[in-house]
Length: 571
Image 1 (spheres, one colour):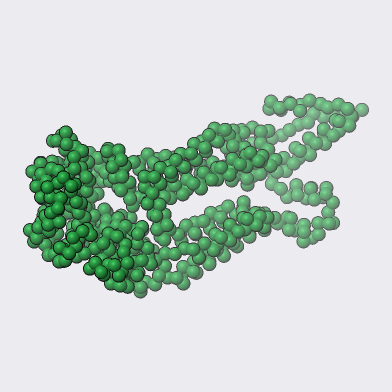
Image 2 (image 1 turned 180 degrees about the vertical axis):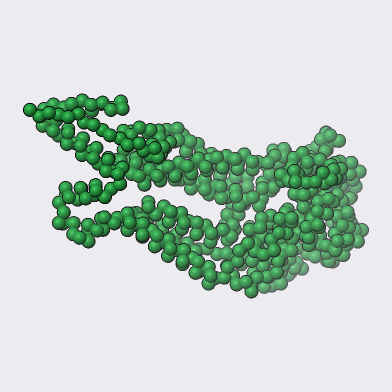
């Protein structure tokens, strides 16, 4: 008579594995885990997770680099909604939360793969992944509609971050070598991806990869509407703050009042930057040029800055500065030019023509020129931007806001260009400089962009943050081509060596069997040898399977089977 002993299952506590499978797939108990291959459905969800992570990574990188233009984005939103608010705050908050969540799930998924566990994503996480994917896609579509030209910042930023992103990607591949190494020899597609990554520097082009001796002098900084982070834009205090930061020129937006006085105002209306809602509540949406100078001068032009804090800088201002801001008024063109003349600085003027019903619709150019003459500033220090009536302003410096050919610029008598940073490629800048054309680029608010343009050789930049660029005495990074090539090749070789080393380590026993001749081993020996070399966790799992299968075979041979219960499961 055969005596059957109860089958005893002994489970060792695996807190780390329980945490991984519990958080990712809500599989907290040992028997809920499986080393079987993941189903096609779960593999599809892993692909969706990877796609969401990649899209969020792109989205987060875009907003990180777009910090240069946050003020422009908020201004565009204001023109659409009529209310000033910082639209970047909810976008950055949701991006940070979504990216952190998806990154955490990606780490858990990779840990599952490394431990041989099924990719069984819990349904709540599936909902979260879909929500993050849909939200990000909606954000991309909305930004493309509202702010489509900002995508150029990505290609430009790669000129500064490209070499470092390449090294970071190599580090990530190397860290994930325990996953990648086996795939290198098994999947031709994976090998192609790795090869493309190693050769990526061939596609990286940066003006900062140059010899130090070829670096031109530091570009001049123009105070764009003064120093709008330190005082309300286009006010006398803002221009004073800009001069204190060492700017070479002052940039202002000019329009003409109803009685022919040129004054400084960026917006079409006075609603955003003055207290017109209190003084003239019925005229909030009227064109700013339809007010006479006495009415404009009666408005407060500083209180909005303290209330809205458009750049999050009010908290850093002194009490004295805040008191001055509370009493600011709209600045006239003559006041700004006189300030520039006393400081021996230049002025860059952007003119907006008044509407057709304006009494000075036809004489706005002459009104502006008369203000320039009354200010006492040298005409050579005033840069003129409008293309209309250039023949009347031959004594002023002429600049074009449109990227024209060198021949066309010379034909119009223009010796400089003022372009948005996305319009001026490194090649364009070099061509203009070779033909004695100076180039001014705007808006340049971040040190990385200032460094790239410095290496490109631009003459000057227009900035909302002269106090920040003042602290950039040298490009953030500058590297000779030979040195960059050495860093590139060394990084690739180190990464390849580590990945191959991990592959050899992971497949050491298989390689050893092949070298000693696997044909001399029978299946039982191979299995026992592999078991003997596995970690304790795998040994326990294999013992459980072997014991369980032997017991079942023995029971079925004798026509009966015992019933065992463990942790809610009956065998």
